[in-house]
Length: 240
Image 1 (cartoon, rainbow, N blue to C red):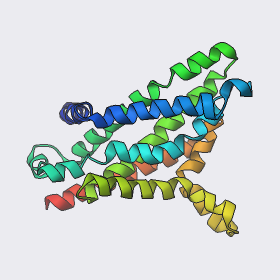
Image 2: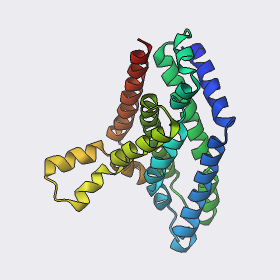
Image 3: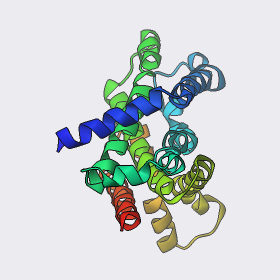
Image 4: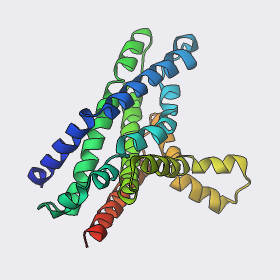
């Protein structure tokens, strides 16, 4: 299985780093992260050994970052006319989807990993709970993985990068912030429960506080798996 998927991963990673998109996304994310925690959140003035305020903005940032990472995945293949070639190669559709997903997830992990100097630097000025920080980073990777799967699925349905980016952004905006409806509307308890269950941002809140709940883990894994499955079925439909 890995032998089959490795060439797809290498191809996708090469396409990321041979274009300016990966560098622009990563640098922009790192610059914004630093400005957010040290300037906008006044981390040192707060005199609190916690990165909760830093990770609180991650779901909002990922609404933009994940579409930027995935917008060209399938849309670019269609534009260049290489999708038909890919589908004729001896790869299963699921292998192609998983290869693109792993490559995008690798870029995400690199991007998040480059923020590690922030807690390492800040830990010199206070006693941090590293278990809480681990939970926060795990949550960031999981919500990012779910966002990637959504972006890949949308990209498989669109014909150009701009429409892929905008539609993915809208879908992730709804999925991430739908629980906020409960704060502005008098929703009945059953509807509030549904909105909270569907919301990607709501499930991230426990990770932000340093809590790892198996229900939140299952949610992100199911969302990722569902959209990867839909992506695969889209390719099967296009092939036939």
